[in-house]
Image 1 (cartoon, rainbow, N blue to C red):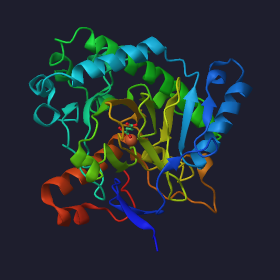
Image 2 (image 1 turned 90 degrees about the vertical axis):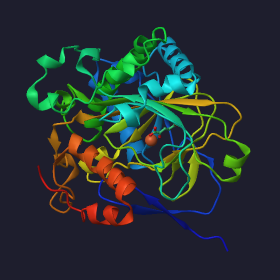
Image 3 (image 1 turned 120 degrees about the vertical axis):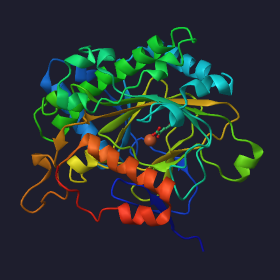
Length: 377
Ligand SMILES: O=C(O)CCC(=O)C(=O)O
Ligand SMILES: [Fe+2]
């Protein structure tokens, strides 16, 4: 008899467990992971924007994942960035090590080599390589400014590090093409957060002044084809996890490999759809919504014989912003489950949990896990 298995997940509050059905992954249906047309969010008419908000709410309360089309990011910007990712990843190891994250970064910027992470304790090490960089005010497409002009509270949380660009300056136009894509994602995310606000019955501008210097992490993932041994081992490209912040915008190439855990516990394949991005809810959004919106578990395995590239963009509030459950998601009969916390501290808690586990072993992980309630700042 086949049985349900338990999947262990890392969260900022310690491990949680999910039941997984014994059936093999299958393709998602359009009801499970819908395609939302974003064209109306650019309309002057609030009724158009509200229509999209309603679709977004439906998807966010269902499986927490959806595709978006007509998102406004030009195809050439995506194509140029993707080519830069390939040019970077196909370099000899010593060139990639010029931006080695473990050696050079205080804040998770830079390059991580193959099999250097194990995001899920229930699965193998992650056989992906990645390159990441974080919000920098001088690169902000909407209101670029020198870091010295940024208010002190926000500045203390800026996590950009220049070595990522210094160590890649031998690649022609690398920074320019990466930033063009990242900047387009940032502009789109600022528009989308307004639709998320509408979707929760809040004023459209509810978060506007909290995303001036936001969590905006650009990451490029590279999944080489699996070796015979890795295939036999069931090696994952990136193990099961949830994303941390408000929401993620993900571009994936045409190879496929992304899977989503449905609310019933069934793994669903989310195949590439030309011209779309995938959007998913993160843990911080789920917290602000008192768990109405779902931060959904997902993972990646490249089962093809070709290399796969994906480009997620993780979006949150300004890291200094302390935010509790939003008023429209609570009532007398549904009190807030969570204390206010800043988006930055929220991320730090999960990173700390992972670090403690990595460096000190099992015991440290258990003692570091706060019970359930996060202390107010
Ligand atoms: O590569 C993908 O399709 C997803 C990547 C992902 O989930 C992540 O980087 O958090
Ligand atoms: Fe993810």
